[in-house]
Length: 275
Image (cartoon, rainbow, N blue to C red; front, side):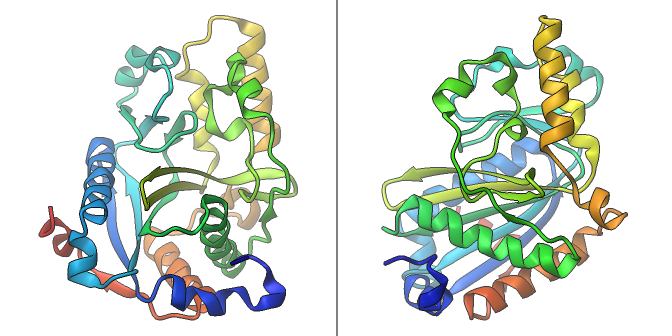
């Protein structure tokens, strides 16, 4: 099933892939709370608690933010790659994501998680999730597009400047004029897939260069140059940082329109009752 071939009216298939779509807004939370919540969601999808309560084939979006700011490491990333003392001094939590990829500084951003139990290929899920974000950005006045190529990540990860997620774009991640505006990562546990992603709202993500443990000045200069030349934020394009509530409205409207569905809202307590 080529879900992302538009000439087959791709989104008409979403109702059969995910018969019911839910979303929850959990607002701004501490970093460890955010990551623990997603790990618990993976558990309730894996053992069927979510499906028994909300229906077989159901999918869930979570929209959230971070307070205080946090730096998250990818699932397999070396914890020594960041300066924890510097993070502590700047009141920045350090947490580990259940998904892969490299470090992200979660400051001014709008974050999403997507969870489902599905046999659809990972690349197809990646693409259709980003299609929703693409439509949401368009409603904000941001004309983004897909990255069409994949870098050699094994080679990239062997370099010192790979410590930040936003120094490289994967296929189907979202860019504006070749500069990354959304970074995402996946992790699959059997049929259950978790996808995380960050939409950059301001240039504060670039402060990560002050938090990474790099002593080589040339590598640090390369990281700084990559962040300046390869990333862009919503505020740089439209001139302001949108409110969380406005972003939530935009993304849920885009979800309904893109997937030809009516996503049903849940409360955080509805999900905590499953834990």
